[in-house]
Length: 221
Image (cartoon, rainbow, N blue to C red; front, side, top):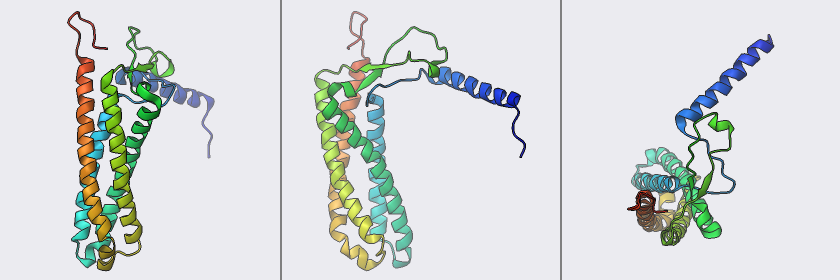
C-alpha cells in the first residue's frame, strides 16, 4: 500500500485544524471545566429525556406482559433495549444528584461572559465556567434531585430483576414469576415520573429567574 506523502499529510492536518476552528465559531465557545459540573440546561434536558425513557420503558413492559407466546422473544428484546436506555439516562440523574449533594452549589455552572471575539475557540482557554448563583433555589433543586435519584434506584432495581429472570425464561411462566416485580415497577415508574416532573419545574423556574434582568438593567445573579 502506498504511503501518503508529507505534502498530503500537511494538507489533511491543515483541513482538520481549519474545520475545528470554524466549527468552534459556529457552535459557540468551547468550555473548559476544571471539575465535575453541569449547566441548568443540561440538567433539564436529562430530566426531560428521563421522562420520555420512563414512558417508553413502561409501554414496552406492558407490551411484554400482554404479548402472545410467539411474540415474547421480540417483546422482551424491545423491553430490554428500552430499559438499557432508561439506565443510561438514569445514571446521569444520579451523577447530577451526587454532584449537588457532595459539591454543593458549585456543581451548577454557567459560561462566563466575554467580549473576546471568536478566534480559535476550541484551542483556547477563554471559554470557562463559573458557579451559577441560585441562592435558596439551589437547595430546593438539590433536594428534589436526591428524590429523583432515590426513585430511579427503586425503578432500576425492578427493571434489573425483570431482565435477569426473563433473559433466560421468555415464556408465560417467566412472566408469572416476575409478576411481583412488574407490579412494583408500575408503582416505582409512577413515583419516578412524578419526581422528574417536580424537579423539571424547579429547574425551569430557576432558569427563568436567572435570565430575568433587574430593574436597574443588571441581572438577578
